[in-house]
Length: 112
Length: 115
Image (tube, rainbow over all chains, first blue to last red; front, side):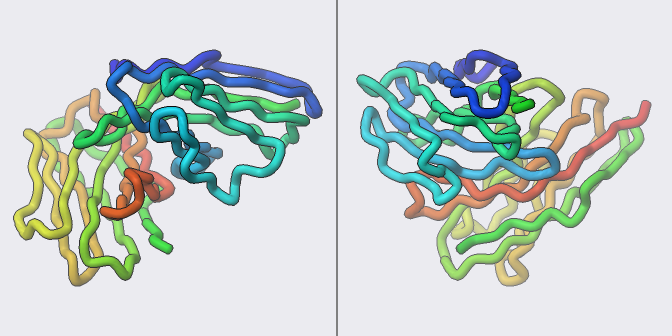
């Protein structure tokens, strides 16, 4: 167990609906990352927080995606007006300086 | 931009035998880190082994070792005495020293261990 938890583990939603995922890193993780993993691909970087500040966003993160990390603790990733192409595993990873990534189990999103 | 290529979508090995997973990468940087991550089915991705590019010595972690060839931009993982619990998807990953710990992954290699 890496100490990083993600909820829900699975989400099925209808196209056009909004969904929100949550990531809870351990308290020492000052850095938090979101990745997206589609079938047959490795994880791809989406966005990065240092404490509560969102410091980098990938071009994969369209306007329909928004992420927050209030108070530098848990983080949420929201997708508005979901599309079938959003179906993927969404992974969260936490870091503290000097260590490598600790990943959560991911949230598998299926858009029908 | 950095790229990571894993040319073996699937590999299989007999229990107790040795298997090598291949990875190549492309970068113009001289200092960076390379990793192998293991992702068991429905479980969290965990770090298997890490290599700093400035170190000539190949990293080892128990039954896991790497063959790091910096000039060839090659980074293979050798698993010795394979166990059933080694069955998983294995990802090679790259991190720049200056990238805020952001990882670039390959597509992965699915390893099957046969009893």
